[in-house]
Image (cartoon, rainbow, N blue to C red; front, side, top):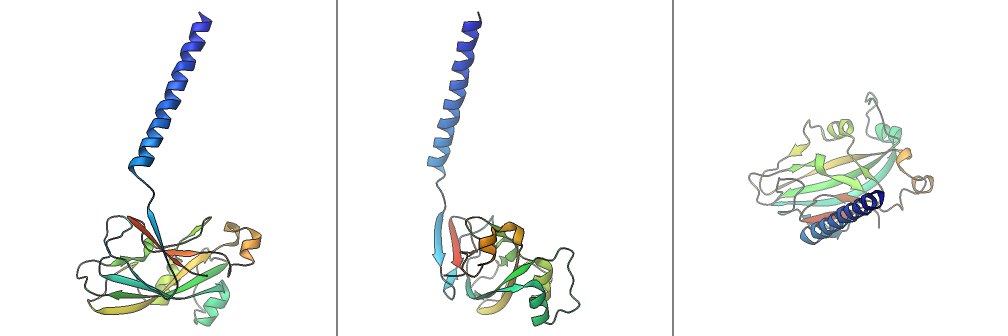
Length: 193
Protein backbone atom coordinates (compact mmCIF):
# COMPACT_ATOMS: atom_id res chain seq x y z
CA UNK A 1 0.00 0.00 0.00
CA UNK A 2 2.86 2.39 0.83
CA UNK A 3 4.36 1.86 -2.61
CA UNK A 4 1.14 2.91 -4.38
CA UNK A 5 0.81 6.00 -2.14
CA UNK A 6 4.32 7.11 -3.03
CA UNK A 7 3.68 6.58 -6.74
CA UNK A 8 0.37 8.45 -6.58
CA UNK A 9 1.94 11.38 -4.69
CA UNK A 10 4.81 11.48 -7.17
CA UNK A 11 2.41 11.56 -10.13
CA UNK A 12 0.36 14.35 -8.49
CA UNK A 13 3.52 16.40 -7.79
CA UNK A 14 4.79 15.95 -11.36
CA UNK A 15 1.34 16.94 -12.66
CA UNK A 16 1.28 20.10 -10.53
CA UNK A 17 4.79 21.10 -11.66
CA UNK A 18 3.87 20.42 -15.31
CA UNK A 19 0.65 22.46 -15.02
CA UNK A 20 2.58 25.31 -13.41
CA UNK A 21 5.21 25.18 -16.20
CA UNK A 22 2.53 25.24 -18.90
CA UNK A 23 0.87 28.24 -17.21
CA UNK A 24 4.17 30.16 -16.99
CA UNK A 25 4.88 29.42 -20.66
CA UNK A 26 1.35 30.56 -21.65
CA UNK A 27 1.61 33.83 -19.67
CA UNK A 28 5.01 34.63 -21.18
CA UNK A 29 3.70 34.02 -24.69
CA UNK A 30 0.46 35.94 -24.16
CA UNK A 31 1.95 38.95 -22.32
CA UNK A 32 5.42 39.68 -23.71
CA UNK A 33 7.83 42.06 -22.03
CA UNK A 34 7.35 45.76 -22.65
CA UNK A 35 9.26 47.48 -25.41
CA UNK A 36 12.06 49.58 -23.88
CA UNK A 37 12.95 52.85 -25.59
CA UNK A 38 16.08 54.71 -24.52
CA UNK A 39 16.67 58.43 -24.90
CA UNK A 40 19.58 60.73 -24.14
CA UNK A 41 19.77 63.75 -21.90
CA UNK A 42 18.75 66.82 -23.90
CA UNK A 43 16.59 64.78 -26.29
CA UNK A 44 12.88 65.63 -26.32
CA UNK A 45 10.71 62.60 -25.49
CA UNK A 46 7.11 62.41 -26.65
CA UNK A 47 5.08 60.82 -23.87
CA UNK A 48 2.13 60.19 -26.21
CA UNK A 49 -0.31 57.43 -25.39
CA UNK A 50 2.24 55.51 -23.33
CA UNK A 51 1.32 55.50 -19.69
CA UNK A 52 1.94 54.35 -16.17
CA UNK A 53 -1.46 53.17 -15.09
CA UNK A 54 -4.54 54.60 -16.76
CA UNK A 55 -3.59 58.20 -17.44
CA UNK A 56 -2.51 59.12 -20.95
CA UNK A 57 0.03 61.92 -21.31
CA UNK A 58 -0.78 62.53 -24.96
CA UNK A 59 0.34 65.97 -26.13
CA UNK A 60 3.13 66.22 -23.53
CA UNK A 61 6.87 66.13 -24.12
CA UNK A 62 9.74 65.99 -21.64
CA UNK A 63 13.37 66.97 -21.97
CA UNK A 64 15.90 66.10 -19.27
CA UNK A 65 18.04 69.24 -19.23
CA UNK A 66 20.49 68.51 -16.42
CA UNK A 67 21.35 66.04 -13.68
CA UNK A 68 23.62 66.71 -10.72
CA UNK A 69 24.44 64.79 -7.57
CA UNK A 70 24.66 66.79 -4.34
CA UNK A 71 25.43 65.99 -0.78
CA UNK A 72 22.15 66.72 0.95
CA UNK A 73 23.44 69.58 3.12
CA UNK A 74 25.28 71.16 0.15
CA UNK A 75 22.06 71.23 -1.88
CA UNK A 76 20.16 72.93 0.94
CA UNK A 77 22.90 75.55 1.26
CA UNK A 78 23.12 76.17 -2.50
CA UNK A 79 19.37 76.78 -2.85
CA UNK A 80 19.04 78.76 0.39
CA UNK A 81 16.90 76.28 2.32
CA UNK A 82 18.52 77.00 5.68
CA UNK A 83 15.30 76.41 7.65
CA UNK A 84 14.28 73.32 5.68
CA UNK A 85 14.06 70.09 7.69
CA UNK A 86 12.99 66.55 6.91
CA UNK A 87 12.25 63.68 9.27
CA UNK A 88 14.50 61.25 7.35
CA UNK A 89 16.89 63.20 5.13
CA UNK A 90 18.79 61.25 2.47
CA UNK A 91 22.57 61.16 2.18
CA UNK A 92 22.61 62.65 -1.31
CA UNK A 93 20.18 64.05 -3.86
CA UNK A 94 20.15 63.40 -7.59
CA UNK A 95 18.69 66.69 -8.80
CA UNK A 96 17.15 66.48 -12.25
CA UNK A 97 15.92 69.52 -14.14
CA UNK A 98 13.24 68.72 -16.71
CA UNK A 99 11.36 70.82 -19.22
CA UNK A 100 7.74 69.81 -19.73
CA UNK A 101 5.97 70.97 -22.89
CA UNK A 102 2.27 70.65 -23.73
CA UNK A 103 1.48 70.98 -27.41
CA UNK A 104 -2.21 70.23 -27.61
CA UNK A 105 -3.58 68.41 -24.57
CA UNK A 106 -6.61 70.03 -22.97
CA UNK A 107 -7.54 67.27 -20.54
CA UNK A 108 -4.47 65.29 -19.54
CA UNK A 109 -1.47 66.11 -17.40
CA UNK A 110 1.56 64.50 -15.79
CA UNK A 111 1.88 62.98 -12.34
CA UNK A 112 5.51 63.08 -11.22
CA UNK A 113 4.77 60.54 -8.48
CA UNK A 114 4.92 57.86 -11.18
CA UNK A 115 8.34 58.88 -12.49
CA UNK A 116 11.24 56.94 -11.02
CA UNK A 117 14.99 57.06 -11.04
CA UNK A 118 16.23 53.55 -11.67
CA UNK A 119 19.08 51.32 -12.66
CA UNK A 120 19.30 47.57 -13.09
CA UNK A 121 19.58 47.23 -9.30
CA UNK A 122 17.73 50.09 -7.62
CA UNK A 123 14.65 52.26 -7.90
CA UNK A 124 14.53 55.66 -6.21
CA UNK A 125 11.54 57.92 -5.55
CA UNK A 126 11.26 61.67 -5.36
CA UNK A 127 12.06 63.50 -2.16
CA UNK A 128 8.57 64.97 -1.87
CA UNK A 129 9.32 67.60 0.77
CA UNK A 130 12.19 68.94 -1.29
CA UNK A 131 10.17 68.68 -4.53
CA UNK A 132 7.39 70.87 -3.11
CA UNK A 133 9.92 73.37 -1.76
CA UNK A 134 12.03 73.63 -4.91
CA UNK A 135 9.09 73.96 -7.32
CA UNK A 136 6.98 76.09 -4.98
CA UNK A 137 3.92 73.92 -5.60
CA UNK A 138 1.90 71.54 -3.46
CA UNK A 139 0.85 68.95 -6.05
CA UNK A 140 2.55 65.98 -7.66
CA UNK A 141 0.30 66.13 -10.73
CA UNK A 142 0.53 69.07 -13.10
CA UNK A 143 -1.33 70.17 -16.20
CA UNK A 144 -0.05 72.90 -18.49
CA UNK A 145 -2.00 75.11 -20.84
CA UNK A 146 -1.89 74.18 -24.51
CA UNK A 147 1.24 75.47 -26.28
CA UNK A 148 3.12 76.12 -23.05
CA UNK A 149 6.14 74.73 -21.27
CA UNK A 150 7.65 74.86 -17.80
CA UNK A 151 10.77 73.67 -15.98
CA UNK A 152 10.63 71.50 -12.87
CA UNK A 153 13.22 70.24 -10.42
CA UNK A 154 12.96 66.57 -9.55
CA UNK A 155 15.06 65.73 -6.46
CA UNK A 156 15.56 61.98 -6.03
CA UNK A 157 16.75 60.47 -2.76
CA UNK A 158 20.05 58.62 -2.73
CA UNK A 159 20.91 56.59 0.36
CA UNK A 160 24.25 54.85 0.72
CA UNK A 161 22.70 51.66 2.13
CA UNK A 162 20.96 51.06 -1.24
CA UNK A 163 24.25 50.90 -3.17
CA UNK A 164 27.39 48.81 -3.16
CA UNK A 165 30.26 50.81 -1.74
CA UNK A 166 32.08 50.90 -5.08
CA UNK A 167 28.95 52.23 -6.81
CA UNK A 168 28.28 54.80 -4.08
CA UNK A 169 31.79 56.17 -4.42
CA UNK A 170 31.37 56.51 -8.21
CA UNK A 171 27.73 57.58 -8.63
CA UNK A 172 28.60 59.91 -11.51
CA UNK A 173 29.49 56.84 -13.60
CA UNK A 174 26.73 54.59 -12.25
CA UNK A 175 24.18 53.94 -15.06
CA UNK A 176 20.83 55.50 -14.10
CA UNK A 177 17.63 56.28 -16.00
CA UNK A 178 14.64 58.52 -15.51
CA UNK A 179 11.64 56.32 -16.35
CA UNK A 180 8.77 58.44 -17.65
CA UNK A 181 6.35 55.77 -18.98
CA UNK A 182 5.82 52.04 -18.35
CA UNK A 183 3.39 50.67 -20.91
CA UNK A 184 3.13 49.77 -23.77
CA UNK A 185 6.54 51.38 -24.23
CA UNK A 186 8.85 51.87 -21.28
CA UNK A 187 10.54 55.19 -22.04
CA UNK A 188 13.80 55.69 -20.17
CA UNK A 189 16.08 58.73 -20.35
CA UNK A 190 19.77 58.01 -19.74
CA UNK A 191 21.11 60.30 -17.07
CA UNK A 192 24.81 59.65 -17.36
CA UNK A 193 26.28 58.37 -20.58
